[in-house]
Image (cartoon, rainbow, N blue to C red; front, side):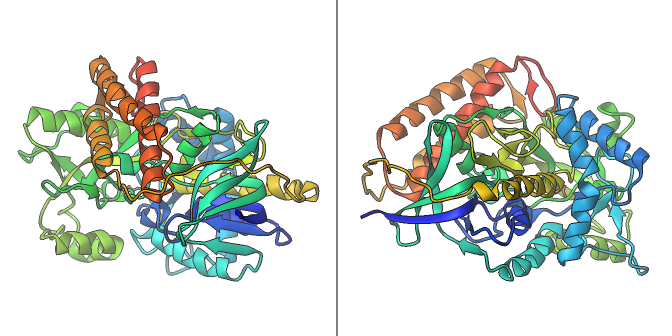
Length: 502
Ligand code: SIN
């Protein structure tokens, strides 16, 4: 007998996008949030810099935010979605504050704003200095607990979307007891985050395996712009370290940080005379990559030593402490940094209300391709995207609530094998392949080789149907890696964070 659960709405993912959507859904609707790990353990929690928003209605400033976003995105952004994002920023920030999310303020209560690469003015709110995501998620978690209509299922991983005639009906979940549960819903929201787990080094947690994107792909949903993987210029460098990499926020450059090569020479002038260290991330990461190549080294330095210890301890308490624990007093010494995977600009294709190409299926946050980031995301626009489009998805769902009813579905007769394989070698190889051939600089012959290696694993995994988290995570990783490589092969020109040498 198969276990069946039914909700009005299910949300897969417990980061800012998922939680904010849930909080905006009408209280009369029964919502289930499913996360494969712990709630709020994803990338939102790790966001340091902040959230970009022109909080006071000022048309000139909003227009500038719009233009900065397009310029960073190499003008391949969706202009309509981008305009919506910058114009609806203020109302959603106000809502966050109203429901109890705290941002850093001056003594007079006004919000403190910082600067990051690609922004022409100070428009980035933050919390806890450089611990914005963790502070926001902490506040949101307790707000969520007051909502009786929302149930949270942690350590429960969705593995497949149930659908019929291009209409989503629910998902299959592996529950905490390792059993198969069929979770049905009128509306399904994917908010499953990014893909950092397919690279050797990423600012994401290793659990970021592109699960939602891969599941949507298997269900035939349109996936776009996957070649636009953003590499953050300043991951904290530790020799031979792999896995999750500590981020040195772009806000450090916003506050005057200078990039120097291994010889101590400032170099950004060669690459972007006008914006220097505050050029967008694609430009800075590619410049660092070139500089590392020319100096036969695997890192550069970020120099903030001209700021006082007191300023640094107050403004960047997390970074200051982390570096100190790793032997660097940032008020006296340069910080070793190198580019690492950070963010996926593309994903599951959506319209401006979060609809995907499948009826009743929505996508929001990093797993979605709303089009607002174009070929390269502007700093601190990711949390903004989560709240603006999360709010819009909730609004859409609320408007349709009167049509909701019991879902009738003939459950598929899936046969799984139950093996304890952990597929570790395959995961290691996926990360090697992506870090070598799908990194900052891409070449035709490398991409073709990557495609060949990944295709072999993809077909081998597809042949077996193992009922385990390991199996699905590995299958999802190889699926998204393959889509990135295939879409990178299709795009012959260099644009934004997709740099083609041949
Ligand atoms: C950072 O603080 O540099 C990261 C913020 C972001 O990814 O926008």
